[in-house]
Length: 475
Ligand SMILES: Cc1ncc(COP(=O)(O)O)c(C=O)c1O
Image (cartoon, rainbow, N blue to C red; front, side):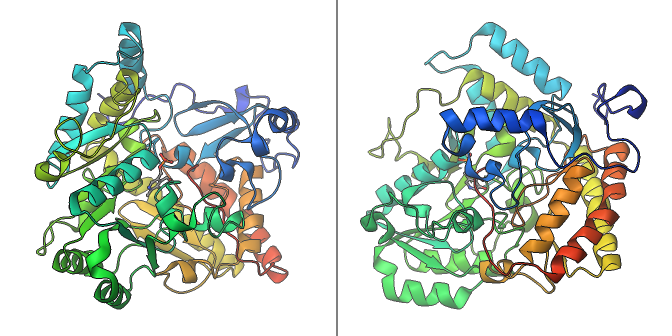
């Protein structure tokens, strides 16, 4: 395959009447999206099927999308945007990559779902096991939430213990036990602990500050014998990008092992994104040993509902049908989703990661230059080619620091970018996702929008609200 996927639908300003006229932003209203939102609100809570899509953190009308191609989204009003959401991570090759479209068409033509095993599931599991050395076996599921929920159950079943340690600002899906201090999506909607999570479930969850090994030592000293597992985002992406400090993951491995607890590395966001083998590929192997279990999602489904959890065979064999830990799914290993995921992973080669790195670096450099010129405090942080821009000065190592951003400045920046044809994640606490389809034209378009947006952020910054609500959930 050529290095650069074809971009048959690249924007040609001259042939697109709805395209942004040079130098003029889109109007702030979006009539077709607004009409759809009104309809949606009648039949769907809040009009959306995942809360952050409602633009709660930034205000305004969420844009309903009609189609996407390469690095570009087209909304219901026919307006086009460079996509820096990437479906919250999965679209690493860009939209409608021809290799994935062909694989999906071929698989769908053979059957949608068999309810019986099929070869594609084996091939996808082999691809994952081949990439992440400590993972000897995987079980396929349909969402990242299902992957972390199942990994937690397996850890509890394997250890006979019930408590789980997690970090504030890390999001692991909307699993009861993991929905405490779960990143900014929960903060955004003023649900510090979601209604409907029984106190008994929350009581089994110990929440600690990220990147604080002393806190981990103390928690294990006090509660060690009842802790089944510690779960962590391999590199946090749900409070903005906050990589683990050097030695942090190795420290977690050491402490959990000393206390007979399992270490679960959640790579739903970082897996196959930060490197061909995720965050583990960048930081591992660790002298102290590998995490016991890993969770994956997003990229490995190529935009379809496929996710996985995996680890050492002796642990994974405790799952039904071999062992006593029950876990199942009608659509697990769905043949069409598996075909999308496998063709996506097979296209995730060194050249792809190089392209991602180049596009990410160019956009991040442009953001730094524009925000610096406008005098807006900011900080860019990285995990491989995954990055985010914090609207505050200084290193961010914890959720508490991430929450110290100027959210008024971000809101103004977000809307100015949107008006200039760049769709950022509608949250100051999210990675900006690029894809292999973010070519020069797409990057240039983003760079051209940045200076005006940075000036808008500077103006808003003067009367920024000091609320600290973020805006993050599962996309
Ligand atoms: C690190 C992490 N784990 C788990 C999840 C949950 O995945 P899903 O939304 O597919 O349920 C997410 C989603 O954003 C995530 O970022």
